[in-house]
Image 1 (cartoon, rainbow, N blue to C red):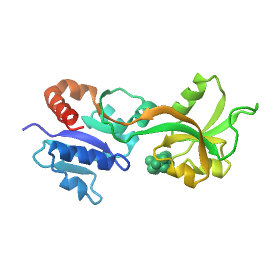
Image 2 (spheres, rainbow, N blue to C red):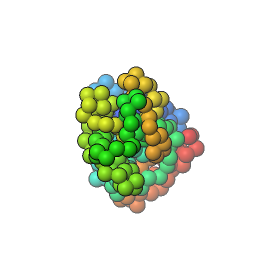
Image 3 (cartoon, rainbow, N blue to C red):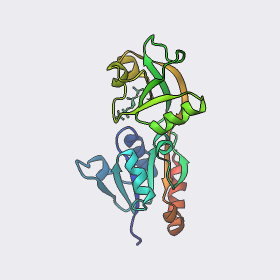
Image 4 (cartoon, rainbow, N blue to C red):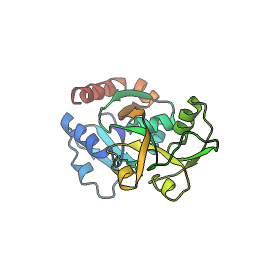
Length: 210
Ligand code: PRP
């Protein structure tokens, strides 16, 4: 038997739905469900090996070919770019990018350059470039909602799913649906050539079970 196909899964937000999909296909995901602190997990009899990683790292591992495939959000794909194939829109992990400020605060208008906090500086830069608007961007690693509350920024560009985080922190959306997002299956370009039939079989199983 060939060495297993290795797939990197994004930890956290997408993890439950991805494991659900693998189980629907028929893979035994006991090792993933009972992983503890283990990071590389076998899927018995599936000729598949699962790596759990942060979203940005999923792309890094797939790009470098140490993982053949990956499941990652379109938000991270757009922010990181990179050379790989994006084969399937998995349909889950749906959310969108939005611009939000503290409730009642104006953003557009006025002459001063606005400051935006975001985990996605490239996406934010492109969005405001396309409007011909000059903004200062500050990269934040987590809970970007804090930045306007602490008065570090005039607003944030972030992913919004239910809107609960914004609501509970007194922020409101002033520009919605900047771009729709969902989880994608990505594939390393060399793996796609070298292990084409195995990957195609996997993709067929995925598509049948969405
Ligand atoms: C994301 C995002 C928001 C929140 C939005 O963070 O950055 O903070 O989810 O979701 P909601 O609209 O359903 O409230 P995530 O939970 O992915 O954690 P992170 O800050 O560690 O990236």
